[in-house]
Length: 341
Image (spheres, helix red, strand yellow):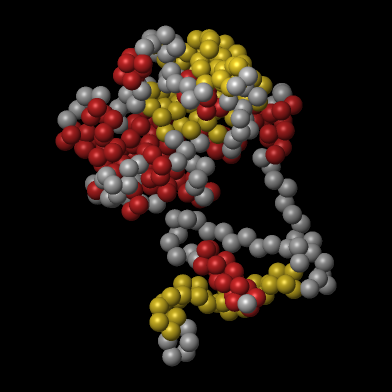
């Protein structure tokens, strides 16, 4: 199978007061149709800059200074801006990190999902509406026939992220760039969204470049991993090989950092003074009842105590409405503030 993406010796410079500084330094890779490459590295390593080069785009203050970026039959560094506009959001699509920032709060979701395809002349409004509903179904969105009639604030973060994926996929692109699309989601919602992304990418044989710093995410999504640091390639290989037997010292340190050390239980001094004790905590809203409790209770009978230098983590999925993580912590802060007055 021929290569769909070929990047050779890519170089990007940033322009500053003291001249140009090279921030991407000779990066090369190739992908066939249906393959997924993960770009991994710490902040500032050049992951997003390299991914955006596949759109023939460099952020303000940067310039694509050298190398080859071939997507299908197109040399992205040789095309005019007008030619690039015909490819962006059409043959090459982009899924951003923050779906909330990508959607217009004043427009219905369905209109925004199909807008790019309408601009590129890929179908009538009715045809694209039907296609969007099919994508909503493929991405496991609830009520696929109705969810598009909502506004962005009327859906959850995980649903909005999948709606942005539908927006990117509705043009049947050859290449999709996923720029840390699950970073803002909690772990359980990430799993749900990644499962939907992975299924759609595989079924549609889309070639994807996945930008991430999360090796757990990469292990689920990618066929290949390219490790970056300071704009340079440190290691590249199949996901299975690189996670099992990393060769580069920096890759080894990333894998070690991804395995958090578990704090041993009972590390606090057994005789330490208890600084915080919760017993039978109830919280709610509305006019108080005769027994003094609020009309509607959102958190009831929480019991916990903490000694000095210990911590308690309150964990639930954001998809679980009314789990009361914020209510519990907020009640503690309000009580402490009231006592301190």
